[in-house]
Length: 180
Image (tube, rainbow, N blue to C red):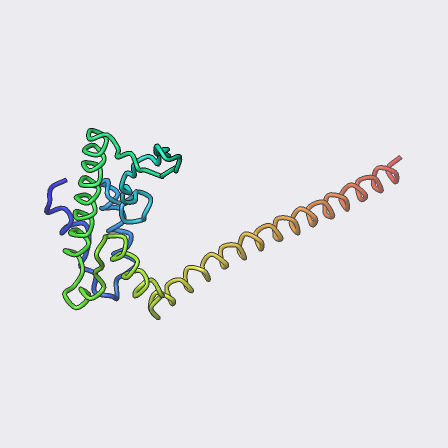
């Protein structure tokens, strides 16, 4: 994917198009390997603390001393922290590029915070999206209703068929007994 793909795949969030924008942005961030930063699953690696040691002085007193971590471990951990910050910056940048200027007040210091701010502001359904959800719910209920009606009709036809078949059987028995 090129850097222009976000323009083609994710609309500008203007507040009225949250549901579409949320789905498209989530998919886009997933495709870039950044969604786990935004949803908080991949969190900032905490600082490495040294090991606590107890040291006994010549006079017998015991002091707690922190033994600093090895330099290579600290450097490797700092590299992980830098990589996380860069990925968070990428996610934050992508989100920022696809929201309208009037919504910039929702930007946070981290991508996760920005997403939570936007979600809090816009995930509450707008009247038009409420109507859409109501229509979808109604259609789902309508579908269940017609499945139920179809089942009832099938049962009624089966019963009528059995009743009709039973009548023919009785009629046939009656004719057979009169014919002998």
